[in-house]
Image (tube, rainbow, N blue to C red):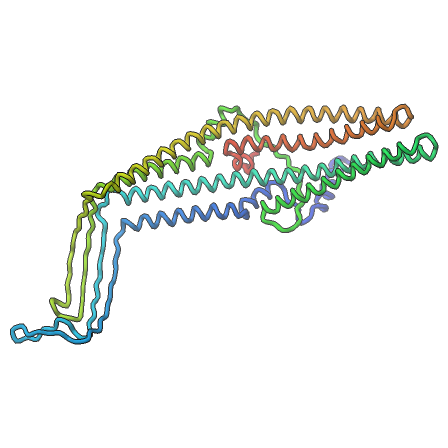
Length: 429
């Protein structure tokens, strides 16, 4: 049988074993972006900001109003004017008035308000991208935790196999009179301890799966597939920090917030400027006095003379909020840089720890093989094999944990730089 045929058979067997609940990491990430409620809320904030922009634009557009009224008076009032009976107050009266209002100038405040809504939309979009980054990091972390739980279950089953083999050997040796009952009890205690670890690993898997279901808005069972997770090489701290200044969504949101604060200060300063409004009115009424039809055009000018310091106070408040926004943006830039520094340092530590864990596992496996051979030939005690099995079991767990921590540390670096979505969902990687 050729190698290609063997590979084909293995692929077919794996494909046949994959159930409807099987979810790959890429599928989990894409579904999280579609179905997670946090993304829906972020999109609603964008829609709300866009609606606010339309509302702000309406302030500079003309308004056309129709006012209609009907009146029932208790009596009719008229007087004689040169032999003509003129009705001043009919018993039944009505009037209709159409008014056109067009703001002509308001110190530029409406235009600044429109620009503010544009910055609000930018802030909402940046917040949505920030929510996507957070959801992707959380989903990837929970997915890897599920993978870790599956790996731990396999490890504990291997450990249980070792404990079971040791117990069977101790029973045979007891029956042959070569070992004491204490050795059998020690083997049984080790087996129960491993079974307890297996139960804890199964519980850990249930918790990880439950959290992942929340991320994906799913109800059914999830079967995770170990991902390759071929992330690009992590660049240096300076390169990551420079890239974050351009693409980090939190920095974009801070910049938009600062723009909004600056525009608010300028808008409040416009309160000292005059307001000019055009009003055009068409009126019709039943009473002919003074006329049953009238048309008028008026331009009104409003200039604030004395407002008891109201405008100055608003300018002062807006100015202080602008200072706060500028300080927050500066603080955020430094916080993101330090987060990148910590993430890169954490990745280096995780990689070193994982390498040491693999070396520890290799040494524990070698030690266990030698102690087991000596134990079978009665040259080592049950305490020796108990210690060797415990060291091997712990080394296996450390390798599984180290593998997870290394992958999480890589994800944390890109998350700190604000580039996790681009890194995880780019086809080239």
